[in-house]
Image (tube, rainbow over all chains, first blue to last red; front, top):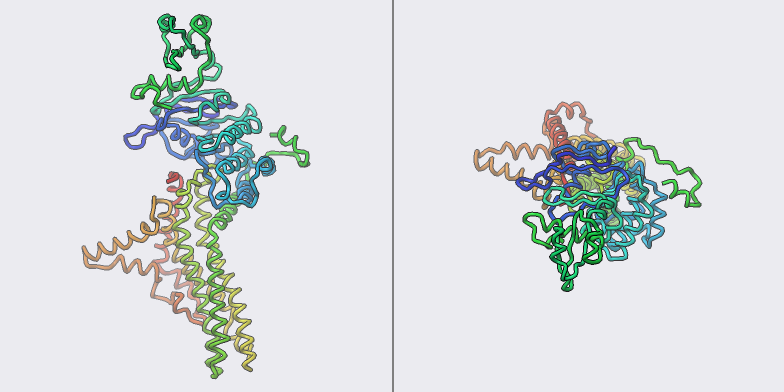
Length: 291
Length: 303
């Protein structure tokens, strides 16, 4: 069974189309990055997946209809939203008690173990914690849930570099076990590049790119071309060109790396560069303005 | 998961996944506790009012009662505050209930914590029920407990004064009967505060789940506006009279009110109360508001 399965997923707010017929299939055990500019429909897609908003079309999460069965689904799905959403009046000890009381798959000793690695005090209220500590607390609560799908919506927004690095490290080392599925949206694409197994670009409610990271590495190549060979390199139809320190960098899709090697050093592009290239070619999107 | 727990030397019990099916009442129980964590005014306000009432009573006994030479009047001074304290506590928990309901489904959207609560396997029905349980169960029970505690302390102090005055303590106790007052309080809370006011609380819950700001204004203005429009347009007052009826209760039998609660027990007219049509319209309205609130909780997100 696929973890996420969508066919013709559609959602409009009045005249604004947020999701324009999305077809999607995410198998279990993947880490999918959903990348898109602001207003692309990322949050709407996540809300539909989490049962927070009604939609048109077909959507099955772990075999369930999220809008009709949100409370059942949430036994197997957990969620960290863009900014800290833990209520400010909640004490750490109360959060642990409450989760133990309401969540059948919450393992309190596990959460205690994660919290022991932090400086968070049991009797502190959320309002007394720093932003980074609130993220640590939320992550500790969520990682102690034996869930099958974890949805992260801009989980590291507003955190400093140390906390951001630590966040993904804990997620990979202490949580991900190749049977769980993680769906993450972020603008900090560089920090998830080596975490993801799958990549999806979304723009104006449509999927504009959907590939595994192996495909990504096989398909896309970036070359810093020597000035005298630019015309020759351009013959291979790069999907994107950019200028860096006076040198031209060309991005190619499905061009043999050995052929490209004659123009200069061939690298796998960063997700950010590919994103700019793909989004820059989208109608109505100024080149390079997307990130 | 198992590889994780194996590294913890302190855990002796087998790390099994907790049963996926829990008793349905457990999430509800924890949601009610959660409400009490968030809204401490629910129990702090009655306790503060009880403390203030006790202070007033001490002044009344030690000051006014002891300086009244007429022993019959002295007894009256000692007896009067008992029902008054009861009424003040009831009024307090009613006001607490109204303000609690107006904030209940609004604050979680305002601070975005609704995204956290909705990420847990708790149905909207359970959440709204846990919030309705506060005015319908927790506040009435709390009113009785706090009133009982207050009245026992008052009785103790008053008895000392009565005995010191050379009067019969047992006669005083027969006159100020705490079991009788508690029964009356429970009757009043159940009929008036729980059943009669049910549409008021659920209306407030509905408003709190619906508004984007200024919940109190949105709750208060529509009834006032309808009354004004009716008066100006048709020069009638049916809606205002009806609203007054919803707050003041039916007049055709002795509907107990805080202000005029008799010291001595009026016969409990449950049959008369339950045959009032207004009660049943109110309960139907309350049910409609409740269902609408549950449906609204489902579609509402953070503000």
